[in-house]
Image (cartoon, rainbow, N blue to C red; front, side):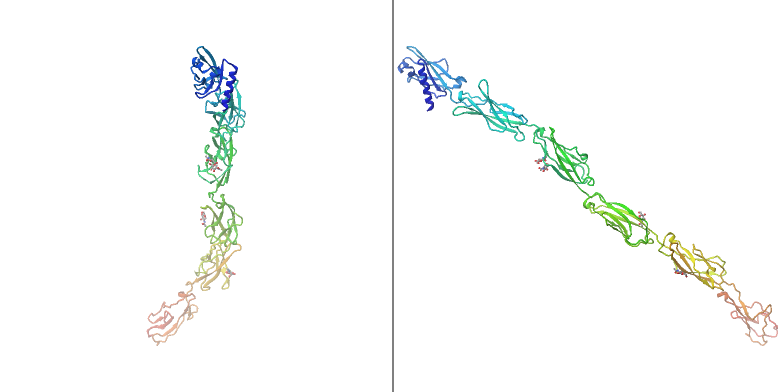
Length: 632
Ligand SMILES: *[C@@H]1O[C@H](CO)[C@@H](O)[C@H](O)[C@H]1NC(C)=O
Ligand SMILES: *[C@@H]1O[C@H](CO)[C@@H](O)[C@H](O)[C@H]1NC(C)=O
Ligand SMILES: *[C@@H]1O[C@H](CO)[C@@H](O)[C@H](O)[C@H]1NC(C)=O
Ligand SMILES: *[C@@H]1O[C@H](CO)[C@@H](O)[C@H](O)[C@H]1NC(C)=O
């Protein structure tokens, strides 16, 4: 309705201004057959004249936009009229033709102004605009956007650009000298690729028509990386444990830093910080994966906890660092060590039980149970070990000592730790026991006895005594001493002597059995100790008889060189006892056994002597022929 009213106003206006010339204004894009104007009426011609004059349109153009309806005297749209096609940007837009009448010929120019209708939306040539903008682009940077075209003119033409709201860009519009409008994006807030790697915006171009039309173009902004982020470790400290002596290439821990930049700017390599020397001897770090491995056996006793820093670096040179704490776990790899603080040898055999002979110190470099040491003494020796102060032990005697049964002793101390398996160390102490004169010399027998023939030569040795002393050296050096006593009223030393060193008992004089039959005396054996110890032994020397005395005739008594006379009667019977010879011998035994024999006789057949009893008897009758004197 409103449009129709506008048209009417225009028609009237032009009719009034010119009689000869008709001017119509119509909107573009009317349907074929739509009324443009009542020509007959406007020219003041009746329909008959139009018919008789064969009224028609003449035009130099190929396209005939309008048609004259002679029967109704109206001008109608014949063909679609596109203002934009017809005039482009030129405004106002009109075309002109003539209405020709014959008989008489009349020519009436008709101008039709084509009014713009908002039938075109602003359009962009592309559907997408691509931008690549560094995230480090400065604030205020401008990016010219593609202009949109709107074929419509005037208010129906392009009026405005609108950018979808976003944080980073604002739109700024400009007018070209030709009046066309263009826009640019101006960076008002820094870009951050890491936060938003791309932006998808829409640029809207709107016209002023009613209804309003618009065109859009998508703007894709790809944000290019700048190395504006350093790598960042995901932990401020990495803790790990590693077993002592772990073999080379044992994995320990992985450090991990990420860099949110892209490409080389985000490519991280790992290294040990230079701040601590020697770490590279123990570990290596994989430059790309951050995995840390053992390169050398780690000694817990040297390093219980290893701390160092690692560095992550991107290819742009930005870095971060973090701490690595590696705790080393002890392994029982150290045996206890025994140190001798003092040791006394020899020790006197009279030392009482509980005497300290040595002090040792034990050490074990391992920790915990692996370093807990216990000491003991091996075997059945009379010693014990005692600790009063941690890790210090005293070796003490556990019983009275006796050098004679245990002159030296190997005391083996075993120090073992409580590890699993335990390690132990042995140390042997060679202890010598020194002598004390606690043993007297001992004779192997209760007494000694020997035989000695009488009439011996003085000085011969009769026997020897020998005592042993189990002590040592001077304490075992035995001297023999003859103990004073009397024998037959004389000191024993007048009979025998004893060699102090050898114990040989010798005769001092020649013995006379007939005087003394045996010698009994005491020999003392005494050692060289201080004070000396001694023991006695009884020695008995039995003197043996020798036949050193002839028998002596006691009867009949002979005086001087005279002959003893006996009387025998002529009548004496056989077996008549003439006399009995009595003799004695001071020797003893066989040496004193006597037998009698006739040595010489005048007549062997007359007398005999009893060999046992010395009786002289007749063995036949005495006769007259026998001499008066018989000599025996
Ligand atoms: C680094 O740590 C992050 C999480 O903190 C994880 O997503 C990533 O996979 C890790 N990288 C490596 C190489 O292990
Ligand atoms: C850090 O990275 C390491 C290695 O990839 C991973 O084991 C660890 O769990 C990560 N730490 C955190 C807190 O994500
Ligand atoms: C003590 O040990 C030493 C050396 O091994 C050895 O010669 C000696 O015979 C040992 N002594 C004893 C009483 O075992
Ligand atoms: C040895 O004998 C002497 C004298 O006969 C005596 O005085 C001494 O006590 C004795 N010694 C021992 C150990 O019997």
